[in-house]
Image (cartoon, rainbow, N blue to C red):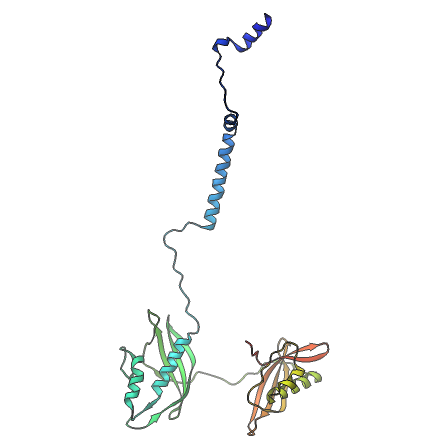
Length: 294
């Protein structure tokens, strides 16, 4: 009797108590829901941060990056040289040939013959022509100074303005002009060069130059280092003397001034740079003036 009262006091009247069954997973979900929500929010924040780091937001259209024109426009140079050749090559007996050659290059912006009026007689031809100077007149437009050797007027210098238009074509942007030669001065040899005092090195250089100039690759190979690539010149010369031999600034090569002559007796004073290496006490040549494979 006393036990029943104790149960009644602790639980109350049995008729007012409702017993319901709940799945265990729901209980666990209810207990862990706040933790799941917090983890999801943290993951969303990390994903958003990574997205903005890889793909940052952009305001409006992306800025246009201006293209830097090449420092050297070979096609424009060739156009200038071609015009110089056509402009300076003429025959008074065939003026129509000059008009036919200059007309397409002059276009509608200048006279059909580029303003060239031929004399009553005579002719002129160009032996060679090449660009020796250039300056930028404005973006996309350059003025090229072309040196041309003619048989009538001698060596002349012609300034030619060339421009690239919107479609990329090359056109003349003005009439040509005869100008003076670019400024130049005398030669300047390396200052404070250290003379080569090693007799064995001097002997190797002299022997290598002799075989190199005479076109004897088999004999030259005896003084070459392993893996050296040297191409002998096509013009065979006879070495007479090595006038001077000095070290380069990094002392990895020597600069030789030599005198040689060809089969006709023409003498040349030539300058060569030879890369040299000390192979276990023996000097070897690893290159002469240039690498034929580059």
